[in-house]
Image (cartoon, rainbow, N blue to C red):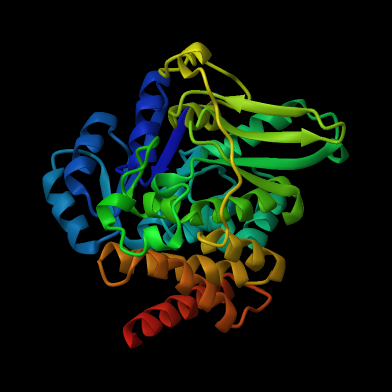
Length: 384
């Protein structure tokens, strides 16, 4: 088991649960990083005594430096700070739970520094999948999925006899707060309604992605890179209870599933302790309490984002970065009450159809496609 870890995104949902896990495992926290929540970050610094604390906002970093001047923790800021936290010599594993494209550069830097990665930042693989997986292979490091769905697949695959035995991956989706709703019913949904997830406690951006089904589209792209399967071999099924976290089907049509209560500490802990399994703070799954599990097909016509992600994956190049960047911009506009809920899918689809994808040769190509997509969405929204 590892003895040290850096946690990027430590004040978010995944980060705080990761700290709960590592505290019980007595793993040294070498670095913590947050966007701007210095109140919680100060508490974490005092509890875990990391070598480095990073605040992405430079102004907030100055505030934190004053607050913890009585400690030995070094305070850094911005992207340079995130990269330093991800590449500390004292660190064995980097858990990246940052939200958005900001997570891509630190991941690549950590891999080049030959650090193993526990990945909860979707955008790293969605936008930069080819670059990231090439770096993983070149540097001979391990990349462990933290998302509950990809962790489930990763766990199911531990018994796979050979690569050719796999027939398909089946990602489960909760369906979010708007499962079975029609376009007419979704026309005037509010932000508070979209943030009311039935099963999981997540940050605002990710919760909206769940409501639009964009998160499942992003997970399809991630699965493509993580498990080296064609897009047509990745299925999605709505499973409202969130007990089966995902499944695989072998060529003989046997299906292997990973089940558990909807608690992110299970996949977080597995990524940190792999290949070992240790006692968990999560309660046991009692199937008699669940009693019934249901399954349904996703509605890709109403929830356009998932279909756009599959189309982008088939198009290749920077198309996935385009849909991701477009979604980040549209998601933010919705959270700011500047567009309607259904416009998120419209804007993502429009960006994919109008922003030119290229074959990325370097990181800047990915970042440029991301920017073009964001600018396209903002300009189109402003023009309405």
